[in-house]
Length: 447
Image 1: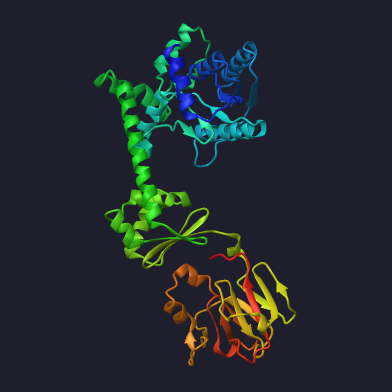
Image 2: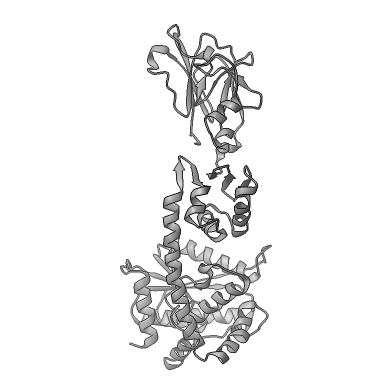
């Protein structure tokens, strides 16, 4: 077995130990790396289908690439899928990045529709080194040093230990036809500049630079694995979930991380959509701006006095903040169920965190269910004097997220009958004289 074949097949087996003979979808551009990958998989009798994107960016050259791939597939009796794209630059992305995103979206669509277990791409060692160097130049953490990941979900890259030189030599020995993408020769693009200008300089300093950097990448990958294990352990130790709310104690984080480290904070938060710049701002807010909120595309983070709190943005947050309830029970809406039941069926007057039981004899209708507001007062059951709801919630040591999600039942005369989930007003509690009680229950409890 040729060394290139051995490396490729061995790597594939390591990346997909669960593989059991299903068809493989191989991305083939017509370049030397993908033509070699397709040829090796075909030689070793893997059931392959080749897929080709024609972005029409190089006009006739693009069409000739597509023609070569189709010709190879036909000659080798391999199923072939091809598609032409018209690429328009998306704001914030380069044309190349836009094309890349289109390519992977289409690959995944085809894989899902036709039941391909894996998508194979032909990224090789030089590609990975160039990616690592690009990340170093623009600034990176340890994950950026490791180059291109060998597996990302169902996308496998089994050629990452094979250099471009090895691939080209293999193609020459085995008379594999391929096409040169002339745009790869220009230094207009950053990656090409690194390939044609920076790496030759580094090779001057170390003729074995490619092999040396390959060893570096493997060392960094091992370090990254240890780093990820440490972060996972930190998450297990620090992060606590209460229904949809995630929280971790700031003092415990400082102790475990030997101070607030932006990189560690980023690792703890990026699963919730927060980027590295936000992590730095959050770290600054921990002691300087308690109460500050940060938003990702699907989560809200609050820097509380003692905790960092994170909750998902849910549809509930766009629902009305006020509901009017006429005395025509039962009533059900998007968020609440209001029912009337005999008092002797209530059991204990104990309430849980998403409901409240109120004696009906003193209620004045219609009722209003609303978020509590500054200045609201009631007499908490068991007490004699009025208390501000803001002080009542502070005494309960509720964090700011939970305070913002507290609702009250207000009678038609403006009196607060109870704080849902916490306490009825003394006047509206269930007593021995209560015959009917009103149960207000929150649906789809957020916390």
